[in-house]
Length: 214
Ligand SMILES: Cc1cc2nc3c(=O)[nH]c(=O)nc-3n(C[C@H](O)[C@H](O)[C@H](O)COP(=O)(O)O)c2cc1C
Image: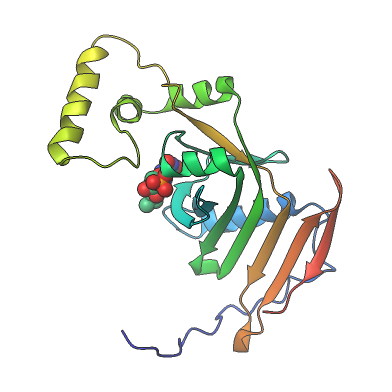
């Protein structure tokens, strides 16, 4: 592909992302935008880019699914021994990015990351399908494999191990909480004069709102 300017101009041109309308709590704004994204037919409105920094300083990003959010932060689940797990163990900070194309909105979150309580991870793991639970045991996420057959053999071994038994959560698998320190809301406007409002946490429960140039 060549370097062509995009014809996309921000078709919706809403004018409601202004300081006068902005709720004091960014989680309330996020909840409204998330509902709009979920209602517009997107298959995975929970899909978000998770960016971390490897122990050697290399940035790394991948998609994970948001499994819940509230005043405490944004929750996702993964393998604690994966590349992201190693990154978060060394540097427990992350950035999240949502891009909801049909409603022309982006949300960026940054902040420290903690592991979820084991009880919370257990409760979520129990709700997953048996196949997903077996997969969490079988897949050494982010490690190199000799070939596909090795993965299938690992799954067969795990299936044999847990035949006729419940599949417990492996200790290397569980949830993370991204505690937001800053949340930026971006909404397309015409002529690329997009609106950007960034909430920065001043104190535990107080957020300062800044307007950023697009
Ligand atoms: C739509 C989508 C959803 C995904 N959801 C998750 C998830 O919730 N948790 C997860 O560990 N990996 C998820 N993945 C896989 C990750 O993108 C990634 O391949 C995996 O976590 C290994 O990343 P790492 O090697 O950087 O640790 C998802 C991938 C896609 C495309």
